[in-house]
Figure 1 (cartoon, rainbow, N blue to C red):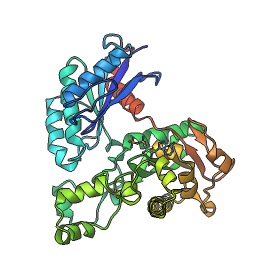
Figure 2 (figure 1 turned 180 degrees about the vertical axis):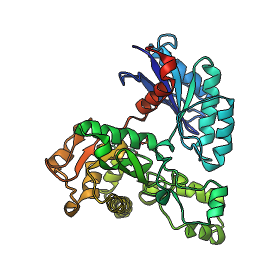
Figure 3 (figure 1 turned 135 degrees about the horizontal axis):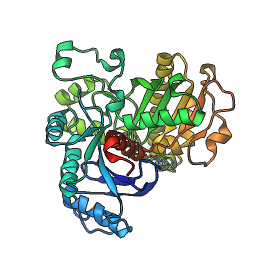
Length: 397
Ligand code: ADP
């Protein structure tokens, strides 16, 4: 079987693409077109990309340049990552005009994320009109979060009329990684209590019992929870009114600050943890202190959430790190889990420091909580979700 799915993740200034065989898991090709709408932007070797339509052409050109003409790929679907599915879109959804209209209605819930995704979908549908296009939602996995975890303690009527709840994000990753953890342990998913820490540029935690999420750190939007690369995570909502009233900042300024100029970048001046660690050893006292504070605040928040989720679960059979920081940063893993032996959580320093890639255990043999590192693969999960939707229609491909 050679069938494949083109997976698209369209952001405001970039389109990430991957061609994945959903059966074998083989990644046929992938890439990113960046700086869309900026002069001088573009994908590898391209001069400039004005908009998403041009970006889609760059995707096709890049695939062709890598020897993957559209005719050879045997594409059976285009899978679109969509951040927010709102209250009623959560199953992978075949995109028709009605689905687009519904997505547009939902855009106010995710003003930074959904509009570019819709743009990407419209452009891709125009370019590949004969293929089914399927939206896979980042909120989907958390749709059935228990009411006590999904509900904000605010005026119930306001919440209901405005569809305000804790939706959770990175769901594709949390689901994939928790399933892979069960595969790695050769244990039934139904038997496991898990904590998953997705630590990338965006970061979120989840608590999962028997394959179903019972808590997650992101909420109405992807701003809640952990400290992230550029997002603040949890703040006192009073801070927003204070900035609005007293600092003369507009709602847009505040939103932009909390999303783009906060988190590790806001405190330490740098978003990439590899550079942050360098700055923590900088000769400049000011740089060093700022980077160290950013790191300390990041770790402190992460530990708070781990503690909270242990209380939610009672105990965890598995705790898994994933995404760019979680998969690669041994210091973050060590500092997040130090001193938790009383809760059954321990690291094997040697395993933690090993440069190994791939799914691996980093806790000592026989520790009550198995600590894992599992690379996430949202593209494969999206491709599989698409194959699942089309199952009957695809035949054997
Ligand atoms: P995204 O949320 O954009 O998908 P990723 O999951 O790819 O992000 O994570 C990107 C982040 O991972 C980088 O900003 C960097 O902080 C971190 N990272 C990547 N590689 C390493 C590494 N070798 N050591 C420490 N951190 C890393």
